[in-house]
Image 1 (cartoon, rainbow, N blue to C red):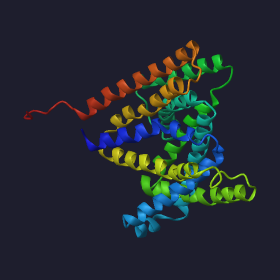
Image 2: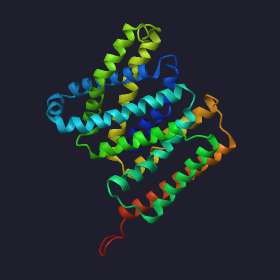
Image 3: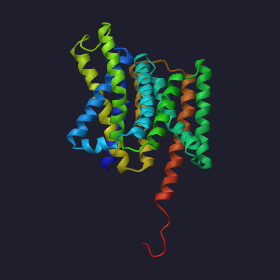
Image 4: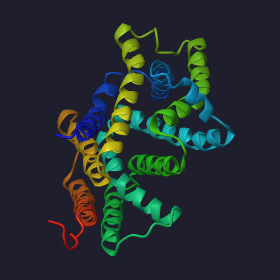
Length: 298
């Protein structure tokens, strides 16, 4: 199997099983977890850059223009991380999975609105179906599925900003976590001063898991970056549904979150949209990649 596909599968499997990791830290407030996720991720990324002898090159990429665009990216990914961890530890894993099922279709819409990309006629069908599914779920929940929509919007907008940003995944994420490092560090120091900090006060296993948040954040992102460079975009698009599928199954079968027949209908509409989206993209990309041979080719 292509190494890029293996990296992609590895990244999405890790993201899919993230809820289990965060559940081990359910006793730690979500905002403290995000603080540790930012700090330890930043330190690990800096170590990777130094060990791979990229420090001088990395330093040259940092300027005011770069900092402006990555500040926006940092705010968006910070919101996404905070909402996700809070939702997982508040027993909303099923709804988080819905957010990541919706996200690819929302990203398509962002491309149309902000990048003036044009959709094929058939591509509007899954977008409309997804909107119908979310509307139905809003009706049966009696409220907007705000967790799912916040995750989809924040990550979709993050993807848009990253598409417009000048740096690769490693340098970009390092700058994003470095921007968030100072406020995260100040917040955690304040919690320590108020005697409400979890770190160093809830046991060695909790401390190690909080430090490990940097590892479980960074490694899948680096694997994904390697995958994205070496496999076709449609394959990346297909693999990305591994994570929310696992999250959904964990929420329903491992953590016994309620999932009614009405929710099944709403999710089913979104899943139908995704199946249509993936198949249509696969066929369109295959037609582009495999053109009709010219005369003389055998």
